[in-house]
Length: 423
Image 1 (cartoon, rainbow, N blue to C red):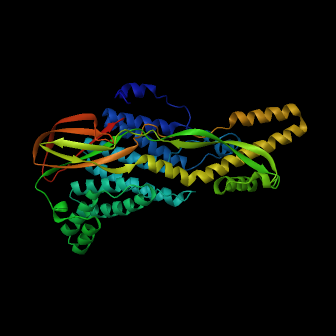
Image 2 (spheres, rainbow, N blue to C red):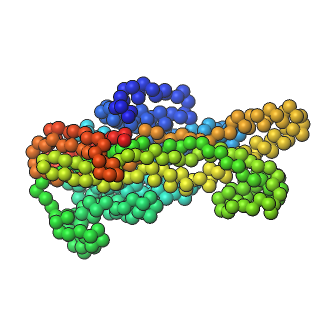
Image 3 (tube, one colour):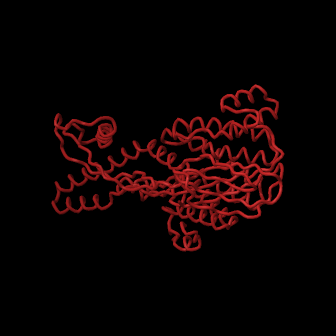
């Protein structure tokens, strides 16, 4: 991928026989086909991913039982919430490139309906419930098609989402969203709301007034998303923990681990339990800003989606439940070993060996995703223009330049483009 050899990357993918890792295969293949420019085929693969996600809602009882005996990786991978939503982002872009904007809007609507559904049914209290970026993109697509009321609703949802993003992920609402809200407010006759948005985003009249220029809207992806790795931790199981109730003992051990540095010298430790857990580790991108140049003008990008931050916060929301299930499984294996040893030393050794061999963290995730997405809004007079997209590091030095020759700019018809850098 980093070399742009998407055919080579596709050749590395191996289609799994069962359903355990099939969704990951569809994720990776659909995205590689998107980057390769095979937009119809990419959408077909992502459609398979959608169908499989729906099927996986009906959990396999046998696999759930097996995962309690072995590890979480035996369960069919159903995707993180943000991964499932991003299918629709890429499908929407595919439809834009295929010249089917109405189908792109359908994907935007599906993304947010899916998020609402996931949030309602989740066994965890999730922070990530509304994808502000996808809401914003939906508004842009609606406005491009002249559906101003729907665009306005999407912009307002994006504004609400970015305010939640600011608190949860440290992503500030992009000022360009304020301009869109103020401009459409006045255009639709909501003067009071337009004034309120202008004041909140610190806008002047020229920041949102309609222009006779055309516009290029660039979605710029860069880096690789944080990856999951296995970590091992040791938890004290105390003499005071109940012997016969695995879940109660597990809850106590998890509480001690998460809420306080436990003073072990004040309580008698029966044994130390070693468990394997997943953890995210960032692969920091070198890119700190993107800039678009052309026609004697330039515009800087704004951070609109930080997938690293979303992935890690989403995992922290679930970490307690994952830890509890992992500790309970390890305790159950320990109890089984003790019972087996009472019958036979050899049997106890074999049970213990099985438990150790099967304990592993579930480190599966959609690896090819970018770490961040930035957006550049670029106003230009109508005509044909050659564009250059620059990637800058923290010192402002140019790391990469990508040329886009012969871009046709029209008034009232935004041009949507996207590009992925691996820096």
